[in-house]
Length: 94
Image (tube, rainbow, N blue to C red; front, top):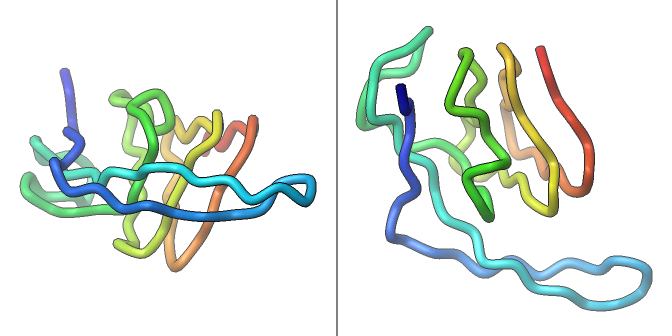
């Protein structure tokens, strides 16, 4: 069962990696079903692809200013709060 979708709205984000300026296109997550303390229709943070945030479990990116991209994976019961930036090949599984 899917718990979120990516919005049509896009946001460009620029960052530096190893001294090189890079850009990534992010899309906001929108809950499409109720789970844990998230209600369908709730807008969350921004990701670059669906593989970043698992459709299973209660994980969610709560802050609308938080971003996650670049191969990171958020899964399990992880609660991604506040203005966080999660980048790279990390795994957050709570």
